[in-house]
Image (cartoon, rainbow, N blue to C red; front, top):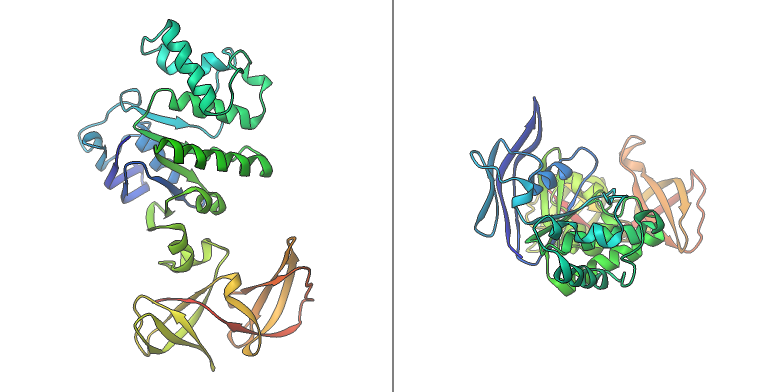
Length: 351
């Protein structure tokens, strides 16, 4: 396995800049997720790492081995990088064992050595004894395991996962996610997991890189990403957050007093000054009903099983302002137009 270093890379398609001076360091044995909405550049970044795309400028290396630069481009087959595709990409005319063993076969390994390697790969993904089956006879989760085994049999320095759970149903997706995590813990492989699903990224990654418009806007642990978003966009995107305009009343070392109109509350910060205007990031669990709180009007409520999500309009900010999300335990339907006061018990100031 190897450390992956991406330095200031640019990739354009005509006048469209897909990657805009992107830098990212993945530690040896680390599992990093690249998270973002469609069109943010995350798949282009994966394709650059795999060698499917050449970069305009910058540097990509694994360990001391340079993959790409302004003058160098190592082809995919010479990078020792494994890729697990969203569509599995299994050959239908080959059985499971033949699919898994193909990367070694084209490198010249045959006979008993190949059979033993395939057997070990099948065992590592929980498919022992299924080598003679055809891909068409497998479930979606089993096909994904075959794709993972085919990737890992070549002992890659880096494993790239391109939205590998997107084609699976919810229950199978959760099961496979835990299998990916368990496999990473056992192998300590250097892995890059690309997804648009923040719950997947939060569950599996050591660190998460959030991308937007070809840039990495924050690279943090899941907890830091949730609790301390670097930008308004990250605050909204991660954890179904909301953002309200505030003014700093006073500031201490780690906490500050923020005000929305005449309602003031305490929030965390990494740099705030009295009188400064900015935004406060809020999550569902950081708001609760309270008699001395902020006056709001319910817009709609949705029961999600176990709790009810209520979307609130902050009265002093007007109808066009951003909504605040309130989570209530159990079934607690709140009719549109209901007046309620809420207290903000936690928040993160973004200057």
